[in-house]
Image (cartoon, rainbow, N blue to C red; front, side, top):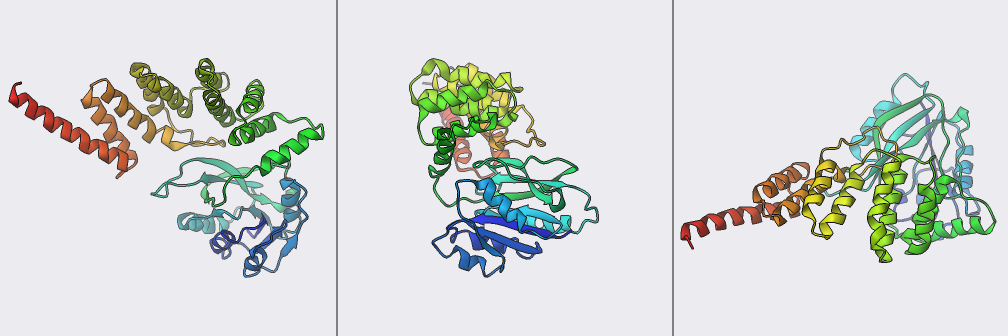
Length: 365
């Protein structure tokens, strides 16, 4: 297959070269659409391609991305953001995938890893449409948090794109949403969630509560968005001191999906803070025994299924005086994150406790 890489950029001099370095030898053309850079972004892009276009920014990411897609000439279109990278193992997978003889698919899904830990393991990931057959004419929708309604023959790949953000979060997305609302345009169910999330990120908690509750009454969203909304809503209630609704917000997620580890751990945190360790152990234990939804297209945070519940079980059992179980679950956490600083500290502390306990018994005090 042949691939056009399409990007939209603005003031990305710190990340654009890093991104293009890891993809330039794989794709067949690179299209960079600049929406108003004032730094050296365009000069950096020119080192990789002569297909650089200006697009007047109109507070509409979908419009800019559709313009970039309109310039593609190859069989498939791939999109990346400037702060994305492709790790070497995934570069090799992408090269292999490109050489496969079957080019009959319309959309290829790749996992999007939103950051990695010190061992390059993903901290949060979800599937995104990354390769799209150009002749199908797929279009981006929504001015902010844009997406492509795709259809046809869809293949899931094991290729990952890794997001390595450098810039701080701004209020840009919030301003776009408020412009839409000021124009009297209704928000879709999907955008109720994203607007609530922008309000939450900007610490406008009371308004976020209103929109998260409106979203949680809908039914057309994806499961992970309802999980995120419930967690964010509980944090909003915590921020405004509404203690009675913190747990209710978390339990609201059960109306939309089976218990997920992300929610179970949050409920565990709720009871742990109240020093109700028996109830906390129940919810952490449930999280630790749930399987990671590998085929979930929405966001999945692996630590809530593996490392976090076992570390918290260790902590809760410690508070209950059950050192053997505290050691057991700390060791399990280390299996998921070998060499983890916190778990290694715990391990040393537990060993010291057991040695100290034996000495105290020998003293027969």
